[in-house]
Amino acid sequence: MDKFIGYTCSLCGHEYAPNEITYTCPKDGGNLDVVLDYEALRKKYQPEDLTSRANPSIWRYLPLLPVSAPAGDATPLHLVGGTPVFALPRLAEKLGLKHLWLKDESRNPTASFKDRASAVVVTRARELGAEVVVTASTGNAGAALAGMAAAVGQKAVIFAPKSAPQAKVAQLLVFGAKVILVDGTYDEAFDLTIKASEEFGWYCRNTGYNPFTAEGKKTAAFEIWEFMYREAAAATRKATGELTIPSNKPRLTIFVSVGDGNIISGLHKGFKDLQTLGWIPHMPRLIGVQAQGSAAIANAFHAKTETITPVQSKTIADSISVDLPRDGVRAVRAASETGGTYVYVSDDEILNAIAELGTVGVFAEPAAATAYAGLVAAKAQGWLDPETPILVLNTGSGLKDVRAAMQAVQPAPIIEPTLEAVRKLL
Image (tube, rainbow, N blue to C red):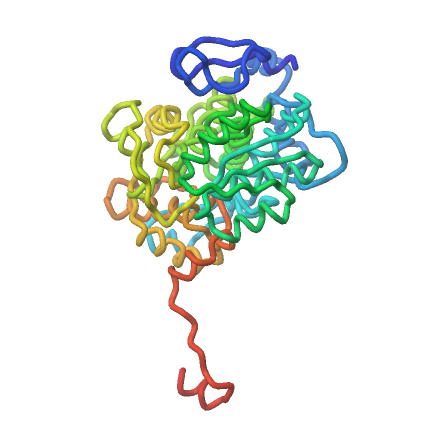
């Protein structure tokens, strides 16, 4: 594919041809950044060429993706993305903010942000003729892979820790994937997946290992970019028809929960692509939020280092519970290079965030609610300007982990089936 011209190692900067390598840099194990032919893209396309397309899914941005369009009729694979952004005025007022929006990724086909990565990876696997795609997952990445694979008849194998929430395991099984529960941590499942892919020749989707995962996740940045024109940046149109963002407006600040680091690094990659094309004057500020019990990336950021020291992860937010983040370096850079930071939140703050989001009609799983918990913490710490436009990324549905949701709320009372019992309760 002419637009996909190679990879660059995020650590040593070594460049590779598209067919020269598959996963990580053999020199130092660094994550690979996909490189597109930006000069050719800049000559061929203008922003309106993408934003005017009727297709609301991630495939509206096909010119900026390193894959071909997926073949076949409409399936869940074709319907990923195009998730809504809506205002939260009551929560904004409560927090003393002028502008607060939420992007709801639970509207994706398998109800999480991970569908974006899996849609692109499965498409890549089909291009390569891979018989089996495999991944390690605490649930969401596996469900996304299983769902996208099922949509096109692709074989999928999922290694998940046996502690994964049953609702997520159920998705894996219903979608027909080969599910293998590991008596160990996510990190142990991750390592086993890589060994299995090498042994059996499977194509590995692992987050922060396969460079195409970030390419799928960057599509959320493209959708936020369109949103910036419409709302947050009060887009105007020059006489030439070029869309512009007024430079005197405060930069959009995005709060995103972080585990392996691949979502925040994917967002960063998307905004870097747009900036390289000259389509945005500056990037939004990216704020990573980590659970206190799983904060290896936040620790590195605040220590002003790119050395990621493993932790013994323990948090209610299973989707971001990681001992050794596999995309930690790029996740640190996502905040540092955009003027952002990292925020720590406790499990109690995460549970409170689930309940608070519920009051405005948003049902978030713990990892998703972590982003809003980070916003609340940042506002309480006093470093967030009330005029700053804020967007919170809700990465997954609360139906993914009902047990955790029940811990966030008071149990429902049980009464006798009489009106007198209702009066007494009221």
